[in-house]
Picture 1: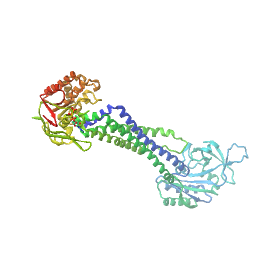
Picture 2: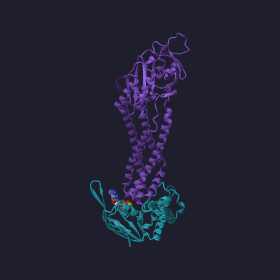
Picture 3: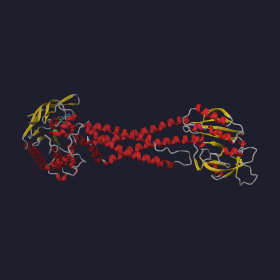
Picture 4: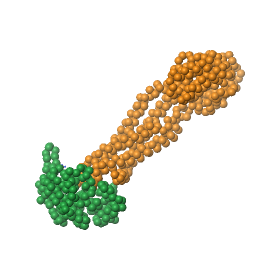
Length: 396
Length: 224
Ligand SMILES: Nc1ncnc2c1ncn2[C@@H]1O[C@H](COP(=O)(O)OP(=O)(O)OP(=O)(O)O)[C@@H](O)[C@H]1O
Ligand SMILES: [Mg+2]
């Protein structure tokens, strides 16, 4: 048995180029599987990221909150009542979209210049954990900034107004004068129109009427909790805020629907990977059979001087497995380097897309599949070699 | 003691069209230890077929065969391989060396199958086998760097290396010119005589046949 390894080694040394080429083709095969899988993951991530940016992470539920004129401490109580969702990794936020025509302008504009329309969202709580809203520059709104109103800009708003440090005059109520607020961060929210996010607690302190005729939504995200539990929490939140839920809590994010849509895309990618693998296996089979044909004489002579069928099969399979293992190691190395360092550099940081990291499952699949392909591609030649007629040793 | 004992060996093949060709029809052969025998006969008389049976390359269909004191008539493929490895050396007509292995590795080949020997014992055996064919200094050469006669001497060293009971050779000088042929044959005979190895040579060359202890002729599927 220990000699079989020696024969396998001499087999590899006899045809180093052939061994290197089949190793390379195996490595390319394994990498193709990993690459196809990465591509599939990234494609899915592009859609999921956009969906989570717009509507919330999986799973996010939303409901309208019916509130009267609200005091800052009522809002604080409401946020406090959301605490139970943090158990198990959840988060909640209250988002208000004023129904009046909100306006904004620069403090340095000449007196009398009318404010121009600006879409605005007033937020409290952990919206950045409910939705995927990466901070591109600066920071997220402070939990409860004393006095000053903080602003976040999306990328389009940055182009319109300027970024971190920009001071704006904002009109958020009909009858009261505009207030001053300063940008503290830039976020990617996936929107194409300028949008400004302002801190609701800070605003409420200055303009208690801001929520008067404003649609207020409660958003609750939790990876696993059921809707019954979340509805209970939502009711307590509404109660703490001195109001009530208007309608039922309903699923707000689109990820489940998207994943369903992406299923066929994944299937197509897997089919391509399977075809790539089948081609690799046939290639190896082809090389294997050709080399047996070329080496018939040698193999028959080996049998004549005492090699058993097992020894011949072992020699050929072991050589193939050695090549397979070496190329698998190479493929794993390259896949890690590619996924860990190269792919992240290719993703625009101004998006919500998160690089998928090393797809270990795909790496394992790729390595197992190529090993299987190596075996499938070399078992037949090995069996053919073992079945050669020894008596022909005397006849060539 | 007889190293080879064949009794009523028959062998036939099926030709296309359900026709049977009986090549051997009851071969009787007994060869003693250290004896050398030449098998002659017309082309197509079945000499190679007989040698393949004696060398356990073909399973025995009809008749009985004992090699090196063991009845090998019904051995499995695996056991025939192991028995070949231990007790039978082959010298083929030509191209029997593994191309990508050096002369040393080629001679070592039988030692790397079957029962294992320690590395140092292997080296000793290989060197002494190469010595007895006068090619110790060519151990590192590849077959393509050796002349036809030298290649055949390496093949003889390989046949000798495991100290087999018998060496079977099919036209061992058939591909060589007259002078080289006689050198190779002398090498083979001397080595066998020194080790008291039984030698069976198939040949159509009267010169070769004459150098053997005994000459048998294959005719109509039988030995005479
Ligand atoms: N596998 C086979 N199928 C069909 N016929 C075969 C087979 N093996 C041998 N024969 C036939 O059996 C006969 C004997 O062949 P063999 O090779 O033993 O002859 P030989 O005495 O060695 O001849 P030569 O001196 O030419 O080498 C030949 O007629 C050959 O055609
Ligand atoms: Mg012949």
